[in-house]
Length: 451
Image 1 (cartoon, rainbow, N blue to C red):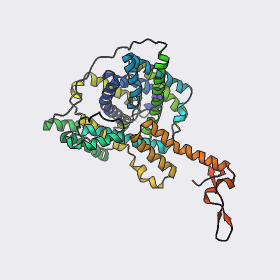
Image 2 (cartoon, rainbow, N blue to C red):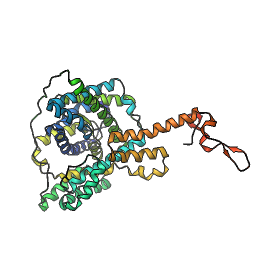
Image 3 (spheres, rainbow, N blue to C red):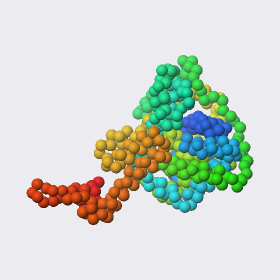
Image 4 (cartoon, helix red, strand yellow):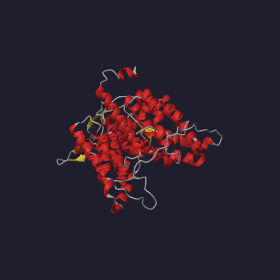
C-alpha cells in the first residue's frame, strides 16, 4: 500500500529528482561513513556498509520517505567502547543489543513521546545542526593541520581552533569549496528543483582538472564485502555490553526522531509527527540495525545533512533512499576510480551549503514576534548544539516548556493571595497585579500568569 501511494502520480521529473537526490546523498555519506567508522576503531568501509545494508529496510518499513540513514557522530563513544573491549565482535554485540532495545522502544510506544518535542526546539535543533555542519567542514575547506591534542568534538571549541589556525590556510581548497557553494546557490535561484549541490561538485571537479589543482581527494576505496561478525555471549556482557547498548539505543532513538522532524520542517511540513509514525520509524530502524549489526556495521540513524541534500536535489519518495544505497554500491565498485579523484574540499563545500540551508533564517527574522518561551527555546537549543551536544540541546530546549508548565500549574492551583501580594494604588485601595489575571491554559480558563 505504501509503495502504491508512493508511485501514484509519479512522473519522470520526480524520478530524476530521486536519482539526483540519492546520488548527492551518497556522495555526502561516503566520506562521513569512512571517517566515523575509523574513529570508532572499525574498518572504514563498515561505515559505508551501514548505510547500504540498512537502506532497504528503512525505505520499505520506515514512515519518512526521504529520511536517509547512516553512521552518526553521536554513536561514536558507545561503539568505540565495544571495539576497545572486544574488537569488531564487541561492536557487533553493542549494535545488535541496541537494535533490539530500539525495537522494544517501538513495541512500548515510547517513540510518540519524542515526537511531541515543540516545534521551536526542532527549529533550533535544525539551526544548530546547520551550524555544526558548517563548522565541522572549515578545517577541510581551509586545509588546516590538526592542532596539538587533535580537534575537539565541541563545535564552538573547534571554531576557535579554526580561527587560531587560519594563518596556515591553503587558498586552493577554499576556491574549490566556494565554486561548489556558488554554483549550488545560483542553481537554487535559477532552477529550484535542480540537483544544485551535485552540479556544484561536477563544476568543481572540472575546474580542478582544468587548472591542474592537486588537493586531498577521497582516495582509493575497499571493494570487499564485509563478513559476518562472529561473537559469543558471556555472563559478564550483562554489565559490559548492555549499559553501552542502552545508551546507544537511547541517543540513536532521539537523534532519529528529531532528525525526521528536522527534515519534515525543511520540506515545509511543520506539523508534529503522528505518534504511531514515530513508533513505526523506531521499529524500522531497529530491524535494519539488527541486520547491519551482524556484520559489525555501526548503528544507522537519520542523518540531517544527506537527508536535506536529498530533498534539495529533488528527492521526494522512498526510491531516493534505495538510489542512495545503489549509488554507494556503485561508488565502491564501478565508480571507485572516479570518486577517488573528487577533492575533499568539494564535498566539504556541499556539506557547508546544505548546513547554511538549515540555519532557518526565517525563524531568526521572526524572533522578536515569537512568544518569549518559544524564542528562548529556539535560541538556546541552537547554541547548545554547538556548545554541548545535540541530545543535551534538545533536553535543554524542552526544559523551558517544562518550567513554564510547572509555573502555570502553580499559579492555577495556588490561592490568589499566595500568588502575588496586592499592590497599593494612589487612592489608598489595592489592585491585583497583572500576573494574576485570568488566562486560558490548555483551553480552560484558570488563574495564572500572563503568557
